[in-house]
Image 1 (cartoon, helix red, strand yellow):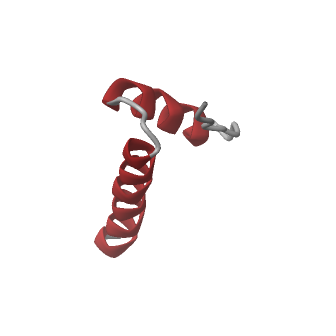
Image 2 (cartoon, rainbow, N blue to C red; image 1 turned 90 degrees about the horizontal axis):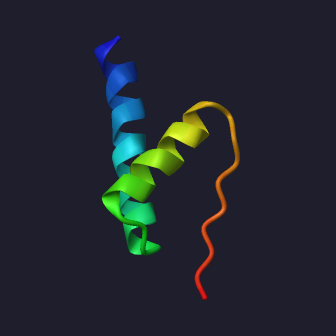
Image 3 (cartoon, helix red, strand yellow; image 1 turned 180 degrees about the vertical axis):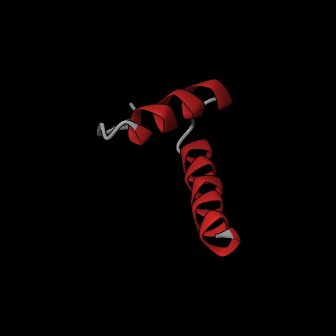
Length: 47
C-alpha cells in the first residue's frame, strides 16, 4: 500500500510543479488539483 501511495503523491508533486511552471499560484494549483480529483478537466492558458 505504501508504494501505491508514493506513486500518487509523486504524481501530485509532479502535477503541482507543472502548474507552477505554467504560472499558477499555489492556491490556484490547489484548486485545479481539487477539480482534477473530482474528474473535471482543467485547462491552463496564458496570454
